[in-house]
Structures are given as structure tokens and as C-alpha cells.
Length: 205
Image (tube, rainbow, N blue to C red; front, side):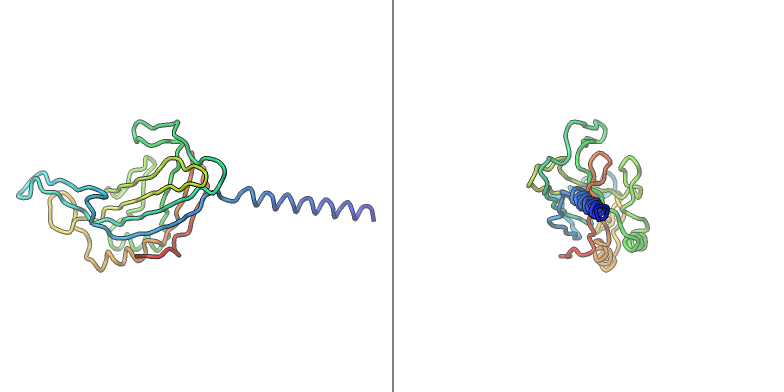
């Protein structure tokens, strides 16, 4: 009987350890909001100057697939840091990094409409498709505070020009937008993933 009692105690202790381990691994980051839309907004991404031809000097405002995310630090410690500035990229290597990882369906739709996977980047963080991107974000989020992150993927221009390609037709752009949330948002600090969020349940405008 004494041996059985000891066995029960060991099993109970082991169960408690598992529960505590599960609690400690819970992410301290919440995805507060996520949206995506097609934009043609000079104030957000700027414009591209035409440098030759009849339209030299004019500014082309590209159409973009634009994502907006708000993350909240629900933990008790500051996330990220600002001590390791990369002087080539002007990003903090110890700061919060946010990535969009497309699901297979989104990859297929991007390749069908754009001819390439616009979400593919090399090890240096450069877009392989070379169509152009823009992003903003904060390297740290204090406890109980929020941080905003944006991504803009250039899809082309709405009129003929010598600088960038024409965008696909409106109906194809809408199809790309329709599948734009078939993706996962990954959050990491110094190469360590701290959270990931399935975007497929997010609402489109």
C-alpha cells in the first residue's frame, strides 16, 4: 500500500510538472488585429519617379497589397531590443521580427496572377521577385503595450510607364486579395520564434 501511495505521488508530481511546462511555453504575444487591402496610396508608400520619355518627372503611384497587424505584449517582460543595430539594413538584430509565410494556396495564386511568389525572400531579406516591398514596425514592445507592423507588396502601376510593370487586371487583383490571408504570421526575436498566428480566419475589408 505504501508503494502504491508513493507511485500515485510521483505520477501526480509528474502531471503537475507537465502542466507547469505547458503554461510556461505559452506565447506572451497576442495578435490584436490583422487586415489586408489593395491600396494606391502615395502617403503610405510614396511614388516612383519617371526618369525618361514623355512622362519624365511624373510620379507613378503603384498599387500594393497592403497588410496591417497590431501585436500586444501580454507578458511581464519587454519583447525585443535596440542594442544591435545592423548598419547595412538599419534594423535591430535583437529587435522583434515579423514575417508573412504564405500557405500553398496563396503561393499558387500569387504565381498564377503575378508570375512569381511575391512573398519569397532571400537570406538577406531581399524580395526574390524584385517587384518592390515596403514594411514598418517597432523593434520592442513593452509589457501590456501594442506595436503596429505593416507590409506593402508592389503589384504594378495602373498606367503604362517606363519604370515599373503594369499591374494585373482588377478582377485578378481581387482574387489575390481574396486569398491574401491564406498565410501564417510569424513573430521572432534574435532568430527564435516566439509566436505564430493563422491568418485564415481574419476578416477582409
